[in-house]
Image (cartoon, rainbow, N blue to C red; front, side, top):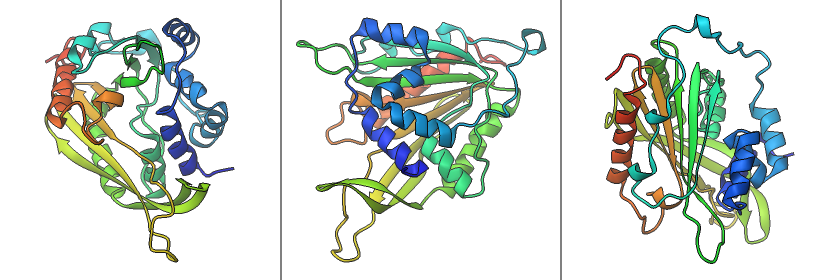
Length: 290
């Protein structure tokens, strides 16, 4: 069985090649399962099972907080989320869900690296969360429907949100050049190679109380015999993490919102502006308020 890193890399790549069902089928799936589970199931049931077994072990997780035990504000209102009009590219379907006691997730592969570097390998947990996936508009004739943006907003314990962003910067610094043996695509199929992962803070302080633009790059080390890379490095992109009070949002641009592709549709400044709007919208639910 491939190692944890290979599974996550394959997952990232496969999710960009998913052929989504019709919008009504997507909505039906979203009602039965969480948005992440639905997306992963569409990509590969096998990958989901392996990834769940290797990355997610929640047996010792604390129970969700009882309503009477939660101080301050509770669930996150829909008005705290980005609207389609806030996105600088056209938007189609919008899928959403709410949760309790969810892990605050930024990047599964970064979390693996954190554990390898001796940093806490378990994500902190939120009290409440709200998530949404914004899809591309359907095309005529209908082909595939890609994801434009995913957004998660988490309400954390008082003081925990600020510590989370600060600790995240430390984890990114520790994973500035992480080498691992993984599976890469070659002309002859999958092959093992050394992959160098690099995370860094591309920008900070541009929205809310705290804001980070995290960039993940990956490269394949050259083959010692030929001097050339043996395959194609996995492609990764950006994460935007913004805090307002006790709320943290994680924005994952994809599709037409990506700025790390040739001839991008949007600029990095437009993506930052979207994060500023996200911070403004979180003001209606943050504790303390803006």
